[in-house]
Image 1: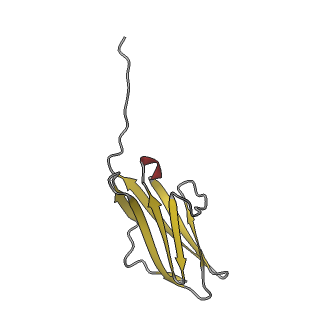
Image 2: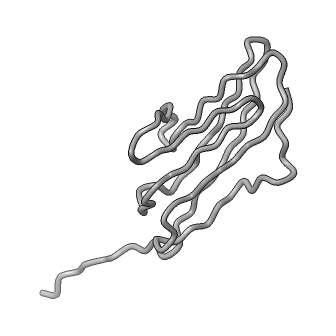
Image 3: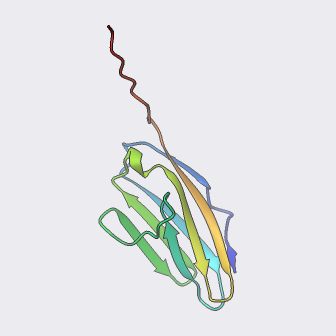
Length: 106
């Protein structure tokens, strides 16, 4: 099983002005592989109002809608065809992320 890495970025930088982020992965597999996307907590992502997943023969995509700072992190794609696995990491960085520090003056 092979993942076409020629057009993939392993790190995606987005800002809150971006409405969404989409990763499209093309691969070759025989027999046909199943795709599983994992969130930064390593839990499988399922289609929801937040996540759109498209699976076609030799192609899968994950779209994260209405991105927020909480969406930043390391995502993974696992392809399994019953004979072997292929894994691909993705990192989402949200621009403008900052830490507010509050202090009291006595």
